[in-house]
Structure formats: structure tokens, C-alpha cells
Length: 312
Image 1: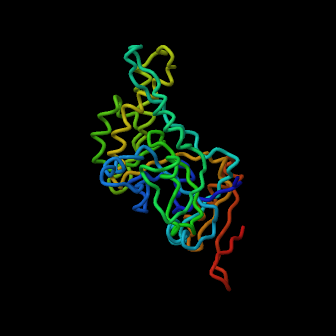
Image 2: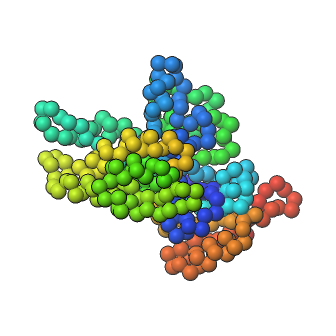
Image 3: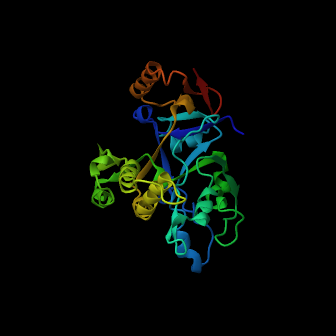
């Protein structure tokens, strides 16, 4: 098992305040083959509408790949976060329970088949990507994880590992303001969305908590074999999952998940990082007792080789 794993990302000052990391939905992944397994025409519509319930957080075994620094860390103006894998990175990662109506019992019961399918994704776990020249097939596969974890061998240089997370558990969602009327339709008390206005007519909201508040108000007690907590989360899932698919199809939509800061081991600053942003983050880390365990490294261009050197 890996003891450490790395995340390439632009330098966003706010990350060190809110610890929110993007999970990329199916429609935002940069590889057109992602979550689109090989299929005939008869299965094409099924494939197009599959796997939308989850987002992917991409990580790497290495912190010194020049291409990844360029592509994912803002052309060396960004950072790489080192995570300690002895800690759980994300708290809200388990798929919500889903229910189905049992006509014999005349009651809602847990949909065991659907729940087991979602659990087979191993959400929240760090899982290694495998590389192959052949696409996984929609009809013929050993495990649904092949569709999440098999990529073209052209990407092997990334040494990628992934964490799969349900969209419905996102801690914050960034949406274009044009989506707000539809979103507010699903929420009884829109003020519970904890709205934060962002540039370019974008808005960050806390949809998950707003829906949970609504569901807790509607469900006051256990119901047969189902606990109140199961019923609340199942109601949230049933209410919003289909809409999340439509929302995720807008490439401007961003799903954010909160990382536990105790899992952050180190921060590596790119060799072209803005000095003001860098100074701000370093001061923040040193002044916050919850972040003082984080080591700081600075990338420098090697004088002799095409590689980066990291210094404290």
C-alpha cells in the first residue's frame, strides 16, 4: 500500500481555508474515452447515461512529472499536495442508501441490489488505475470498476490512482447562476444553500446539507426496519440524483469535496509560482496550529537535467 499520494492543482488561496478539492464528473473528464466503454449501437444510449452518479478525484504516485506540472498545476505556477494515506482523505464518501417499494410489505425497503452495485465502486478508497490498449466493454467485464479504472496506455506516465465519490455527497457545488431557479425548486428553504457568489456569474452552494435539513423535517422517526438516518439519506438521494446528472452535463458545474487537513503531509510550490500567493499560503500554514504539521517544499529547475529539485 502506498504511504503517500500526490494531487497536482492550481494554487488557490481559498483551498487552505476550505480544503475543497474538485471531483470531476463524467462530463468534465478530459479524456473522451472516460466512462464510455466499448459498446454496440444497441447499448450506446445506456452507456451515455451511465456512471453519471460519481465524480473522480485523480491522484498520482509521483510529484515530479514535468508534463503533469504543466498540464494540471497551471504550467508550474501551481502546487502539488502530498497526502498521507494513513488517514482517510474524505469523510463524506459513502453512497446514500436507496429504497424501493415492496408491494407485499406495503412499505419502502432497502434496494439491496442497487446498494451492492454502488458499494462495488469502493467509493472513498484510493484505487490504482490500470492501463491498456483495449477499451473495456459494456457487455463483457469482470467488474464495473474496469470502467472507472482502465485507461489507454498513452496515459501511463501519470501513474494515476483515483478516489471515486458520489455526486450527491459533494460538500459544495459551483454552478452558473442560471441553474439557481431549478435548484431552489428542490429546496424548501433556499437560504440553507449557503450561497457564495463567485466571478463570472458562478455561485457556490451547499446543496447536500440543505436537502438533508429538508428531509429531516419531513421524516420524524424510524419506519419499520429502516432507521430515520437511512430514510433521510434515501430521500435526499431519490430527490436529487436525476437532477444532478443534468446539472453535471454543464461543463461549468464543479463538484467539491472537503479534505481532512490532517491528511495533508506536504505542499510543493511550482518553480514559477506567484510570490505573493506563495507567501500568503506559507504564512497561513505557519500561523494555523491545525496546519503546522505540513512541510513546505520549493521546486527548482535542475541545472543539468530535465527535472525538478525540491528544497525545504
